[in-house]
Image (cartoon, rainbow, N blue to C red):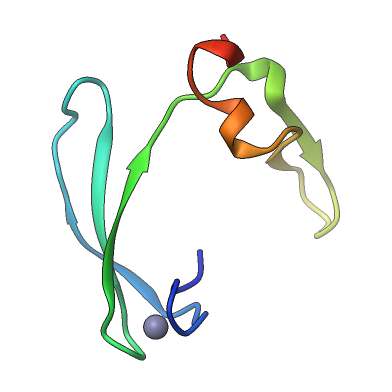
Length: 75
Ligand SMILES: [Zn+2]
């Protein structure tokens, strides 16, 4: 993840909320420009997950744009 303002990778999680309605909400903060923002964790169907070995080890990746991977359409 990168900072939406300065694109720095120096991100930390400030706060993680409990699962509200099955969603995990996190407050993120940039250590470079001090911007804070929120992210929501969403479950995705196994059908949209592919695997890549670019870095030498198997890493899961989305095979479709994220807006198609979440929500009812993906189930
Ligand atoms: Zn930043």
